[in-house]
Picture 1: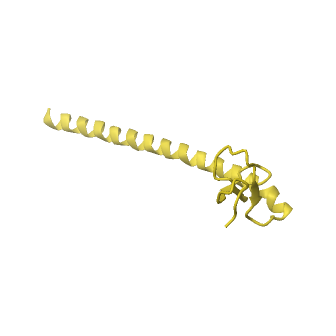
Picture 2: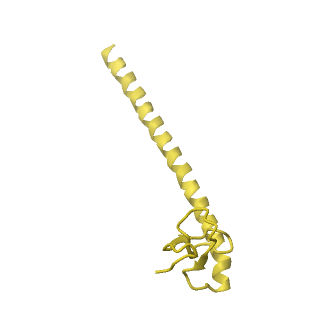
Amino acid sequence: MVWCRCGRVCIIKTSWTDAHSGFRFYSCPIEGSRCGWIDWFDPPMCERTVQIIPGLLKARNRHETAIEELTSQLRKIKMYLMFSWLGFLSIVVMYILA
């Protein structure tokens, strides 16, 4: 168990800055505490890993955004297809009944 300068049990947070993406660290549990105590939970990564991770995270975020946009477009296309079939069926029914 790790304690901060306030005498409280530290919590583990994850850093998402470019310099330390994905690194976990101990932090004071009080948000905005003036204690200012932090310590790294994870051992240091090699320099190459530190360089690669930010690019991978950005690419992943771009892909997730693209997936959301494509899912939305697919939903719209399915709705258009359903309405076109309903229109077609209504024309066929009107033709048969006439």
